[in-house]
Image 1 (cartoon, rainbow, N blue to C red):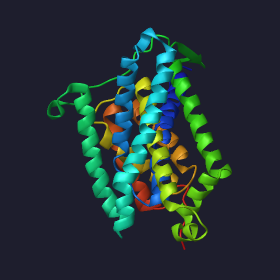
Image 2 (image 1 turned 90 degrees about the vertical axis):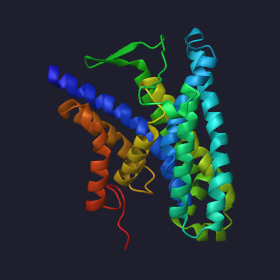
Image 3 (image 1 turned 90 degrees about the horizontal axis):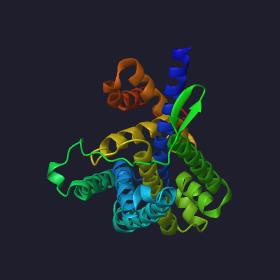
Image 4 (image 1 turned 180 degrees about the vertical axis):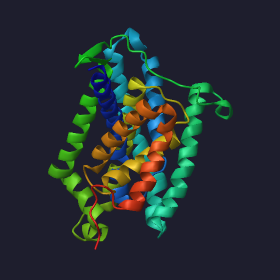
Length: 307
């Protein structure tokens, strides 16, 4: 019975961790499907989301104001990352889309540079010296108003339940946005055929900047959830980028629900591996899955084969 409870707890934790992955993967998958530009700075944007959450929460009084400070922090993070996404699209992405024929390679080079810049900025904010930061420079939020919840004999923080509710709501909201709104349908049309979408009157520039704003917003949102549930540090960006690429391959590059399925699956697999083989092997899980899926099914587990 104890083993079953432990296994159930591991799966619950894995689903909650996978929910954070799914939330972040929705952003990178959205921007790639609309612009065909692979944003390798997305993991570092998650890191910046965690850093700004920590900074804003501290400036707003932290635990002294309780849930009110946390809600205000979330609003500030979402506003900041919406503006940041629009700025990235206008300053970096749009010149690539307008002036370069090989969007994928050019985008990779530019976003790798952006990732390095964000890593240094995050390190400077936390330790004031980017040259001397290390993985020991970790941050997390102390939330005294968070209690434990019991599910089937397993105890976990109610912050995890809150995180999962928010993640599910965000995923459902994005799905309905794609299906029911003009902007969502315009994004889907561009992802299917960019030239045809332009012919029928879709404003490619407007949709592109909105897409990057939403995608970056999801990265900041994932950083907010991450620093509440776990710890974060300025060096986590690269690891998260690899995880996001794995999730994209798992779920299918342009599958609307693929990132959610891929993120949840990766989270459960990582914690099962950690419980069986030790936490040391978790960092290798994403790479092993990524290479295996690319060899077996390059279009992803839920992707469609192209004739």
